[in-house]
Length: 74
Image (cartoon, rainbow, N blue to C red; front, side, top):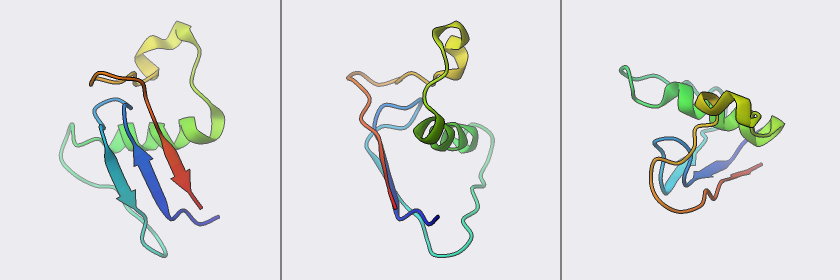
């Protein structure tokens, strides 16, 4: 499966972000608090759904105002 683009709006710290995947292997790296784990959680959530309300810390609810609007293109 090849991803083309992800649009993230209202997922954790991400707000109105277009992320373009390059052909081949994509590696996420950066300093602490850069959003690496948030991006991994976003991809997992897109495929498997949001965790239950019991795990509120794992839900990555929007830090910005407004409802979330997320998508991924293949």
